[in-house]
Length: 178
Image 1 (cartoon, one colour):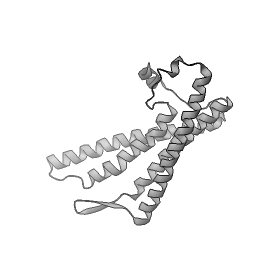
Image 2 (cartoon, rainbow, N blue to C red):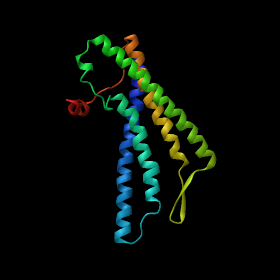
Image 3 (cartoon, one colour):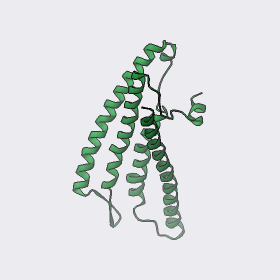
Image 4 (tube, one colour):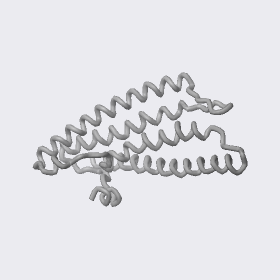
């Protein structure tokens, strides 16, 4: 079980790296577009479509798995902190199962939509050019799958009492939560 957690942590770190690279690329892309537009009267074609349909999708849907591993989603713990350990564990398992179910629905719906968009060759028009965007639809079920896997793994580890291989916290998250 521990090695599965390590593998999921590796996938999460990889997703985090992809997200960080994406932020830098988006910043450079938008900066180049602004400079081109206002200094040379030659904006980069397709910037709005690429930012909205690639960079933002990557950032949002890749990051949900990372946030799940780090337990960085919003939670209100004022009542659960007052409970004994056993009821807290039961609530943790219940919320994990609910998370897997909801994110599983998102993953299946995302997969279905990605198949449709791929078969139809989805494109968006910006200016006089058409930009293919069907590839970005595959990022939704991918990110949802990572989140569902991490949540399901956490439920199994909680139920079995096995050693957890996830890197659930890092210093930044711990600092923010304190």
